[in-house]
Image (cartoon, rainbow, N blue to C red; front, side, top):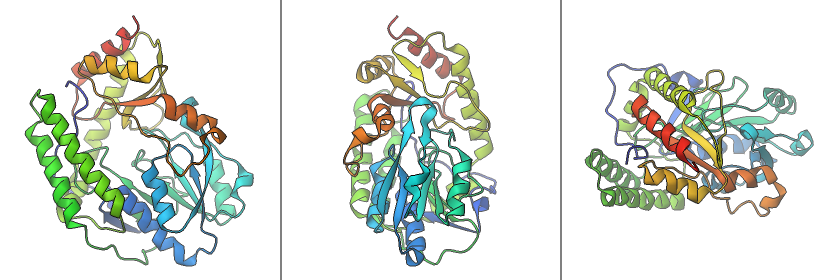
Length: 349
């Protein structure tokens, strides 16, 4: 596979970075993104009598599980497929106590003016930074997310309280999960330079066994020391520059978009792409075409079971039906990006 392998375990860097400890007054390192979100909600809940959250209809079910487990009722806002822009409705804020804010795939396209409305209504803003870890909004009260989509780390969760200390303490990381997670990362490292698809499949099996176990028992679990060291010493500036360079390379070499289209055709502002995300008319055919060229892709996400009627959110329904994402991260160089562009150009030729 040219593009699409999972991250092996990162080495600890040589220089401590200001990120992520500079994100707020109190930064907790947690076992996963959902553990981070749940921990923030546990901190909010004692002083929250309403416990109603305004959350995106395009999201992962693990995010919604956090709100459900913390005793929150979810009210959804739709997402415009054009640039993944949230469709906020001010009237739907009545009774809401927590607003879930997020960007997608490294791009923040939401209207910051709506955050001011939330602040005026004394609604707390919990920003999910999993897709936009380097663009925290200054109006957010809490930040939470995972860096596992950005590097190879066992525990990638970060929970941040911007202007005060957390009232809760994280519980120790689950040792069974940690053992499984490190077994998976080690298997990826062992297969990193091989071409045997069977080995890749074994790594993915280990990943999903571990992932599904976490979904069954996630809590306010903390991180392990190795993961924390990786996150504190990782060369973020180099990674950001490389991802932006790779995205620009793709844009430069694309000649046509037939049967598919880029969601973000421009590298706007300070965006740091997590993936190259596209809409495909026939997604399975499109993904098969890429796979035949040695390029893996991922679909984030299926419709969460918590959304009873996806028809009520036509934008999100369209996204769920056609989106797929391709890695363009710091492991790849311009040669791989040219090959990716060539495969995209060849689709339906």
